[in-house]
Image (cartoon, rainbow, N blue to C red; front, side, top):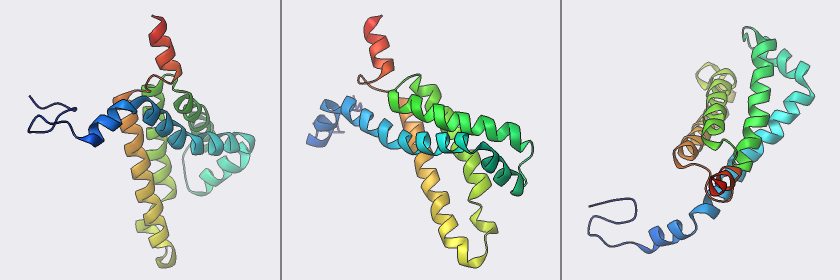
Length: 155
């Protein structure tokens, strides 16, 4: 039987063994690396919420005050939950949804002027990669070195 730990021949590769041995540390690193930018950016938006909402209004976002406030809160506190590994699966899905919305609002490269199109396309693709990271985190969970791991060990 083939599973995540073995190859088709039944042998376990050194990369698989190493990744499995360090899985919790790798998940911790992934959470910190994925979540940190959202914590910084989200709290920055909350500290200057009027400017953020004004930017959304200028881009034609409906209900910009409501959606901007919700978005900044999800970005800041969802990012913090990911970093801490607290309610990780939910937080990862919420921040992924935020990133989808932000990408569709701010990085519509197909509408950008020619001189900005390539940079917007790069930002669009970068955000797709970040979304993929959050989906992988939602699938895997936080790992042992997390609030979720601590809560599971106590039950």
